[in-house]
Length: 96
Image (cartoon, rainbow, N blue to C red; front, side, top):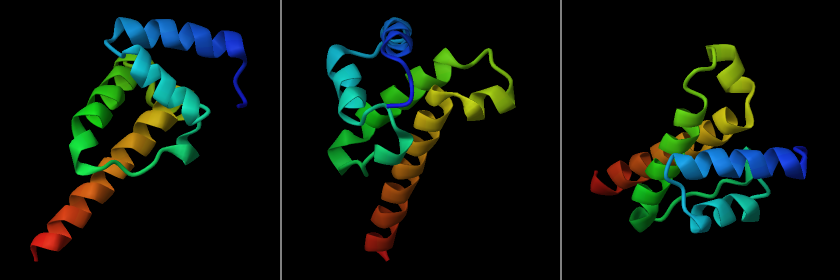
């Protein structure tokens, strides 16, 4: 993990204020807070991923576009959004 433990603890406290649970924060811990480690969701996990993405985006809402993209939260939110888009595409492909 490239971020210091104190930075992660501060981030966890902020994300909890945006509705993330201990289970959500443990999920990020298991990913080592790395956007590269975000797995594809199962269909029943979509709501969890959407909630996590929303909390991350809420935390960086006041940042500029470049700052968002460079932030840990922005990278994680983008990775979650990408995995959700992949799932949506996979499900749409199954319907064809």
